[in-house]
Image (cartoon, rainbow, N blue to C red; front, side, top):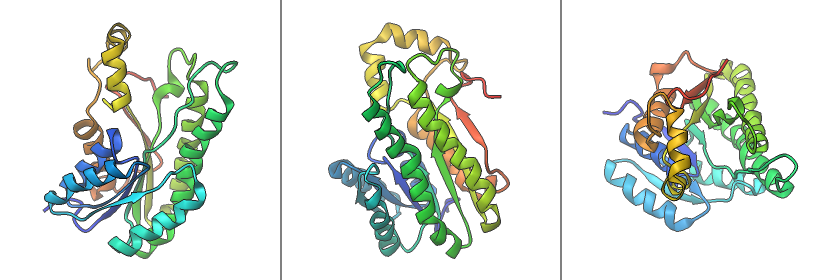
Length: 253
């Protein structure tokens, strides 16, 4: 018996990295999983890893930047799995660089794939969660907004802060619907971060020195397990919060 038995979760960007880790952790606790992402082969591979855990897992190919396709994606999940209890907004495109140099098209894409796609999905799943008596939404944000030096991270953090604001607003507005909404600011060994640590080891070593826990988190064990708790009844009184899963690095006020 898992603490999420009978729950149905939709996770964006679940074909790799943090999304994959979250999907695995939730499936191990009994949740059926809709694996949403752009690359079909990654989605199919993830589902093949999850189904031996005794849950249903379906691939849903979708580019979250194309907001008009999200309704069909949600409809697919509801039709095939029977509803939605959990939404994890993980997929996003990053826009990095100084304010004078960052590509404005990249900034636009970051806002489309981040807060705009998340807001659209939150609105789409709301009636399905209400129909099932409530639900849990977890939005992936970032501690870049509270970095000691935000140089090069301003537009990336801005998109994530918009999502953090949506999270707080949804928690306030949907609490009476028994829908809890929290944000998570993770550090985890995603494919991109792994590439950076392997190809720029000196920079990575300096970065890790700033983490009190002394390491970068694991996608499933550190991030996924925390999301399990946020989606379970064990955290039923927690909503509107931002949880920093970064080994103690950032200072949140």
